[in-house]
Length: 283
Ligand SMILES: C[S@@+](CC[C@H](N)C(=O)[O-])C[C@H]1O[C@@H](n2cnc3c(N)ncnc32)[C@H](O)[C@@H]1O
Image 1 (cartoon, rainbow, N blue to C red):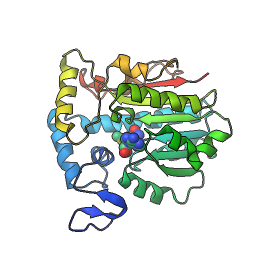
Image 2 (cartoon, protein in one colour):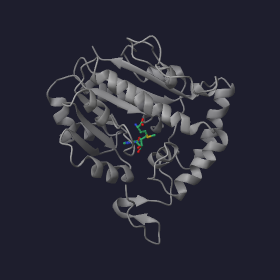
Image 3 (tube, protein in one colour):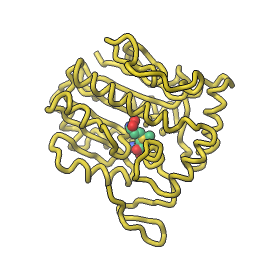
Image 4 (cartoon, rainbow, N blue to C red):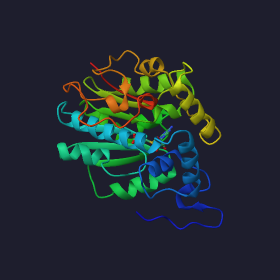
């Protein structure tokens, strides 16, 4: 992927400000991508001072995305996906994974980061079953009114709403719950909600200490980022019942039909609890 020319102020086309780190580009750096700038790399390195495993989390989260989408498109027969807070295109994006299982699968990506919007549109231009919507997910009415989203939902067929490492960017807990509830209300019966979320057990133990240190590093740059307790993350699902294995460290998530993840342990015991995953079905 090519970078757009940068002017003296650090601003590039499409409102991309390279002088301030962006969540999507920091994540891209951890995934070994090329769509990041000096400001992103500087913050990434500060994060790695307190959490050297950050690249492993990013890779593990992407593996979860691949696993969950493969399972949803295959075993669950889901043909429609909304990837909310999609991040920069990288290897094994949702449409690639879903369409590998079912060539007829449709995907709408949503993100509000200008870097993601520029790259997302460029990547997806030749795939008629894949759309990119530039929107702020904290405005569900605007998102649901978007033509691509509305069309995906209009058929009344089950949809998978995937929110990977996105909900923890909404600072207020009640607002986060309300946003999720509004989207779930709009999903047809038989739909799925799949979430990964940063966790702080809030018990003062080793995981909480890493989470607190991380927050300290990023609080000025990402002021709305919130690590939440397992109980809070579960509460974001509202009335939906979590499918087995329930809310678990992302590295431990596996489809309900499997007994365990099909990969080896990569984490030390403590830090595995910094990102949790869960999936629920709307009956
Ligand atoms: C860490 S990336 C996660 C990427 C991908 N979902 C994954 O799990 O691999 C989080 C993404 O959420 C997006 N995001 C955060 N808040 C958002 C909002 N209010 N509206 C739209 N996108 C948002 C960011 O721009 C970023 O691209």
